[in-house]
Amino acid sequence: MLENIYQHFKKSEQPFIERMNEQLINVRETYTPILTDFLNPRQLFILESLIRRYDDLKYRSFGGYEQAESQRVVIVPDFMLIEDTDFRIAVLEVSYPTKFAEINHSQILGTFLAQGLERSKLGDIISDGVRYQVIVDEMIADFLIEQVERVASIKIRLAKVDLREIIDHKDEFIEENMTITSVSV
Image (tube, rainbow, N blue to C red; front, side):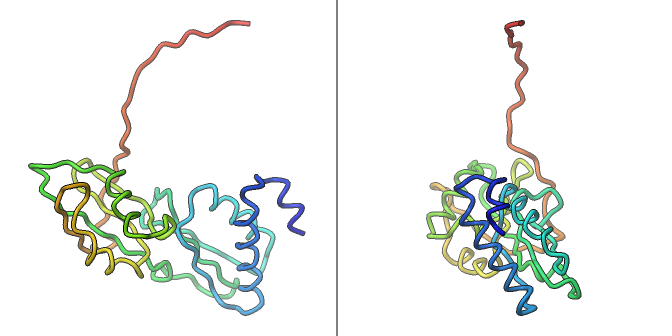
């Protein structure tokens, strides 16, 4: 049955498809809900494609805020309810001396990954231009608060904040105007 699905995806995605399909079958057979790690948009698309094959399952995805790129998914039998608390997400605010130092997304991500964490345990890193917040699996939040004291060479402090305190995210990008010539056919 998975052979029909494999043809629509890359060969490198087959292990993910197999793992997710096993979990979906487990939900159906044991009526036990599952919570995924943080998934990227492609993984989320694949999982949604798999779930559509089962009419007795339902799911909801959430990454801490509406436009989240990395999201966790809760999958349950269709008779169960999905609550916001089922996603087990924590938001960590990064406090640092903003008048004297600057940090960026990649420095924060590198620091967290240097703690030995898998990327799938970390959600989005969001910023309003000065403040930064990191969305994480709540199981690792206390560990990070205790262990992470610096980003690059800048002293920081991490603190949990409520989901309702998520900052309005600004994408870090540079807008450029260009004129590009094309070859007409």
